View 1 (tube, rainbow, N blue to C red):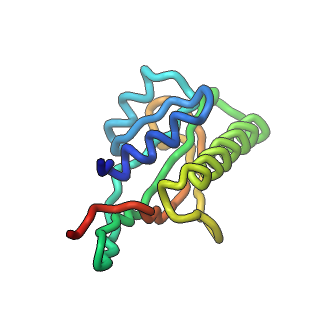
View 2 (cartoon, helix red, strand yellow):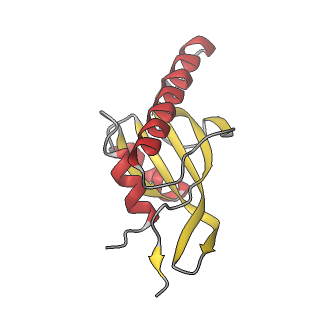
Length: 143
């Protein structure tokens, strides 16, 4: 049975302890995060990708942006905020390890760009966003 890339990512996210998973765009996530337990992993709707087609199958290879966010105080100081950022980096590392163990995607290695965010959403969160190109190991049969 074929499963979407999003469902495959969600199955990996379920292995992360005490992290809420959300698949959405920034605008809707902004509203939903206010009522969800944190920390959270936000799989943002992909805006682009590519199909990799061989004689036997078609594999989806989306350009993914995944954010890891945790609560922060309204008037945070730099040291406190840095602790939240480092914790979110740890969540990203856990996710990448689980992703590679899953066998659902080709091995993620090399450089993974990340950016820091704060004051981006209505809820008081700080976090990091990573950019990944995930290529399915098993795609849709072409025969």
